[in-house]
Length: 394
Ligand SMILES: NC(=O)c1ccc[n+]([C@@H]2O[C@H](COP(=O)([O-])OP(=O)(O)OC[C@H]3O[C@@H](n4cnc5c(N)ncnc54)[C@H](O)[C@@H]3O)[C@@H](O)[C@H]2O)c1
Image (cartoon, rainbow, N blue to C red; front, side, top):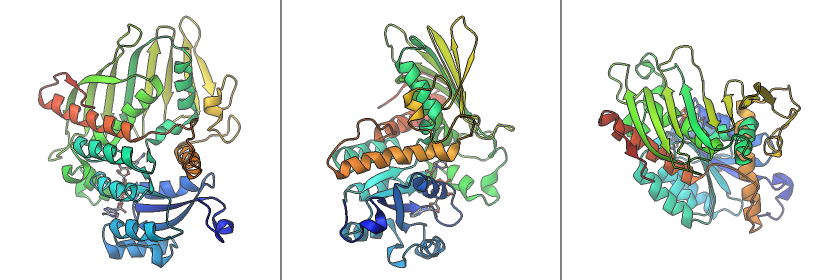
């Protein structure tokens, strides 16, 4: 949607707003950085904090136009939708319980939503949001950002090409250590809301990082999760939500094979920072990938020596080179992988402007969000029933 007299300012860039991400917040700043990496977005408006005073102060800090720094997301949705140069997309980077309201408000105004995970704080809300997103004249992008890494795209393409044969084993883990002690009682805002069921939802570690591990395993393997058996713990005394989860997984049968797997999510594992890893094995071979060394992918055709594939190196497929920026050996990392989701979204949004669909772009959507919440609620139900197998309600 070109705006007369403003093309020179925006150069076709997508006008982006943000809900959350005010002073002292974590992921909002990351969204702002990565949205700029490939020059597809201009950040022009925000409702950045939970109180109008903090929101206005945060807007000032970031150099936003005071007229476009709002005290609430409701006001922002109303006023931005009424402007000729209003935002075309909004990033939602608030705690989990504050995703549904803003996502609904902006989708209903035809503004694209780029929302962080987990998509909502309950499965009921996730399903309701899917119904709204399905009807909306706007796109919904969920930032399960690890799906943006080039070697993850490579692994997914290899599995699609049949290089691993039929998939049998799908293992994912995401251990961290930052909640080993009760950080929620010593002033960490990020720990406070994550351990509060009213703001986080029914899941602690399973919602915060387990959903990332599951999403990545499904994204790469192409498998569909059918049921699970979970053992959740809150090791820190007085903590209301899980801080460690061991989960067994059964996937839907494909070509006569029923893949099995395991998922470990922990925030009380000293020595592990962001230890997201996946291991996927099929009838013809296996792959292994670790987030802390994301430019490399181990590939083992059965019976042959292991091969270390590198981003943009020999054997790199178009699926990965398409989302790489620099030659092999120059590391790309978390920010570049995250930026790939923003860039894929930008291609889809720009195609949408022209009434087209960008068929070649890949990003997580509201469907992935619903699966994430169904996973959280199945884990809680299973663990309460002493590890009983529970089917996913998607
Ligand atoms: N994709 C990832 O890797 C990743 C990483 C971290 C967090 N997250 C997700 O991002 C979200 C935010 O996490 P965080 O760690 O940045 O939290 P945070 O506590 O650091 O930031 C939350 C921000 O939201 C603001 N906020 C709260 N209520 C608001 C409201 N009603 N209106 C406007 N702003 C409001 C707070 O003032 C704060 O600025 C969560 O859903 C989390 O799960 C995703």
